[in-house]
Each structure stands twice: as structure tokens, then as C-alpha cells.
Image 1 (cartoon, helix red, strand yellow):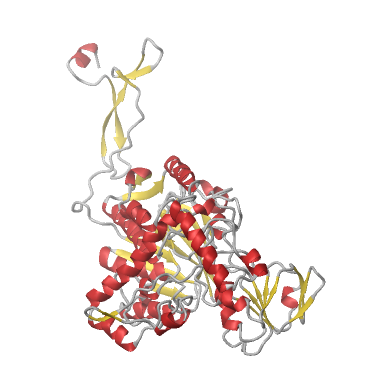
Image 2 (tube, rainbow, N blue to C red):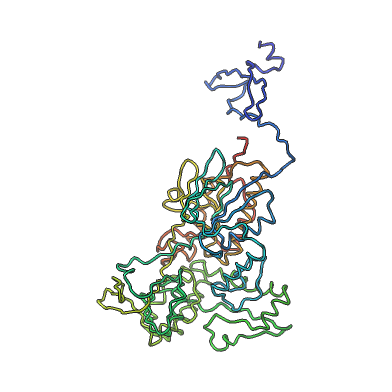
Length: 569
């Protein structure tokens, strides 16, 4: 071409034939002339040099926003897995879902009427605080009612997942019946939870014990505890709930440590008729007992009047949320809570000087998980209960040895010693460029809103680190996280997206903000807690705010926080 041609508005350069790699169509493309500027930079047609545009993908023979087919794998068939199956049926089209559950059945000490999905109330709870079998039955009934088993594969343990960038899919390895299976999915959801790997205490000779040895998270119902000498190990919520149940024998409670044992939350009475309220006989007998059992006429009121039942549930939830002010360090609410707790614990311990000194903490209320602990303090002052403060040095076939030289002969050892809080999944997760999540999250998890991780595209975890772990009722948070993942699936389907990967700089900026907020929370107090990976001064992995604040934050996804790659790229 000549200068005259360029002056007439034609593009300077040479034309050559190219093949569109998407549709194979042959055409002409201009190879532009490159000219140095006065500064030595290169210009193209008088403009600063730009990166080359990708080839045009060609037109798709479909209607606007037609969803492409997706395959989704959800790890676990507990509360989030069942919720995902239910909501996807109603909100997604043209998809496949499979929930891999390692246990032989689905299911995976909050007030019963808020330990339900917001959309699926249960008017038939027997007690104010539901026991494990009844909660398990709720989820099984939910699964059967909505015919969700078709999505679930039991006794299938996910052992690994690797992202394949070229395919835009996760390769998932599953162990079943001694074999390793392979599955593929565009989206991987992890709802396996963080309290699912229980931990034995590291004590010499533990498994040499000849009596019954069990962990609180793997309870053995066949063990008869009546009139047995029981050693209870642990100081957390499980131990606090177990001691009153074994108190009738001759239990030894090893190393009971200081923690706040909260009095019961104010119970919401049930109106049987307009203006008439039922009063629990338990409440009249002992105000320190938070458990109460619903009368037949109260349950019937819930069944007959769903609108009243909804208002009752809201009242319980409100009672939890309105108390969040105590979690602000050095606040008036925090100080009032501490004074009240000290007074209540002293009264329940009958001012026993040794127990009060050892059990009442100096750190703020809420630094560790609050536990109502019906009967725990009362059990410790019983004559047949033996608190043992010396450290355990070894376990022998007949019992336990402590550092003071004493030997404790027992029939049963119950280890209420918590869980492995590694924060990363129980399976090997490999993202972009071969990076493993367990390495990427060292020394601390770099988690976005408790649901996503930079470098792990199309991966959403339900209530991971920096989620609403200690901020209120968890099931509404699970529901909203599931809806977040479904919104991502819809976007991927309708916009021909290859992958969504949350940005690293955005995630780090958010976590710096949460770290700053946590400086003013009671969770950074001088207590050892699983919120801080069982350390005293570790990084707090809870969300920085209340559960209501968290729900509002994740309700509408911020897609600008993600790097988006399209199928045509």
C-alpha cells in the first residue's frame, strides 16, 4: 500500500490469509506497520502498542444467555449437601449434581427451632435444645420428603481433586469399596465441614487401655456407663455436656480448666391461646437448667399455626443476634456480661474456693465458644465426682497415671479432646499451576469470605475459614453460601464462562480489614480456642462481624472480585 492509500483512510500494512481457529473460516487480516516514536516506543497506526486481540470466536447458534450444561460435585451429604440438592432443583437447569458422602448415612447445641433450614421448619421438636438423634432424623426426613437420595453416593470418600485449566474442570478422585474412582466436574463444592476429623489425645499408651475407650465424636452406644468408673478427658464443649450424663457413677474429670459456663438463654414461652403463655416446669424448678421439653399442646400449636411458629422461631433468633454486643472487647455490654457470669458461676459452684479459682477465667466472655453446660458446675461439686488437676503422663491397661505419681484405675475412658483444625480439606486439593491448598494457605488461610480461595477456580467451600464460624446460627449462613455458589453456576452457564477465580489482591485486602476489626473483638483475648487453631495468640478465623452482617455481605456476589476467563479464550 502507498502513502496515498493510507491518506484515503485505508490501514497501512500488508494483508495475509488467516484461519479462524474456532470456526475454520479463511479470511484476510491486516499486518500493521510498526513505527518508532520520538521516545523510542512503538506505535501501530499512530497509537501506542496494544496487546493482540484473541481471534473472534464466531457466532454461536443459540438464543441469548442459553445455559450450557454443567456438572457439579458436592463433597458431603450433610446440611449443606442436602440444601444444595434442594435449591439446585429449583434454581438451576441443564445440570448434573452428585454428592459424595464418606459415611454410611446422610447427616453430617443450638435451640431446636433454629437448627432447621429457614424454608423447612420442624414444629415437632421435643425439646428446646435438640439431641443428636432428633437432629439426624430431621435431615433424613428432609432428604426423603424431597427425594434427594438420587443425588447422593454414600460410602464414597473424596480423596483428591485437581484443576485442569485446559478443560476448565476438576478431576476428582473418590475411594469406594477398596477402589479408586475418577469423576469430573465444572464446579466443585466442599461441604465436608471443619469439625469432621476428631483427634485422639497424644498420651503414651492410650490404646493399651483394656477397658472401653471412646471419643465424644464417635460415641459407642453399646457401652454401659451405669455404675462405671469413668475418666473424662477434655475441657471443651463436649466434655462440659458429657459430665452431667456420667455423673451418677464415679467419674474422674481430668484437668478441668477455666472457661465461661453460660447460664441458659432466656427461653421463649409458647402462647397456647391469645394472651396465655405456657411455663415450663423445668424453669420453675431450676432456673440454671436451660433444657425444656415441649408439651403436647405446645407442639400442636406450632403444627396448627405455621405463622405463629415462624414468629416463635424469629424470637429465638432475635435473642441470639441482639446479644452480639458482648463480643466487642472492653465494651459496656462485655463488662456487664462478665460480672453476671462471675456471679452466676460462683453461685452454682457454691463459692467453692478451689473450683472458683480454677474455673472462672480472667479473659472476656465469648473468647471461647460459650456453652450453656446444664449440670456441669453442679456435677463438679458432687462428692462422687473427682476433679483431677495433675497432667496425665501415661495410660496403662488398667487406668491412667498422672504427674503427681498417682494412679487412677477406671473402667471407661472418654476422650472429649476435639478436632483437627487444619482448615484445609481432608482431601488433597490442587489448583492452578499445581499449587496445593495446604501449601497456599501457609501460614494462614487466604480465604475469601469463607467461601473461595485464590488460585482455585470454580471452587466454593461452605463455611470455611473467615466464614460465620462463631457469629450466630450457622444454617442460614449455609443456605446463603449455597445460593452464592448457585449464582456463580448460573453466571458460568449463561455467559459461556470457563472459570471464575477470586482475585488474590482483593482477598488479602479483605482479610487485612477483618484482622483489624478482630483487634477490637473478644476473640483475640488471652484464651486458647479453636477459632485460633487451638492457640492463644493465633489469627482469628471468624468473620469480622455478626452473622447478620455476614449474610448481608455475601447475599449479592461481587463478580468484580473475580478474574473471569471465557470459554472462547
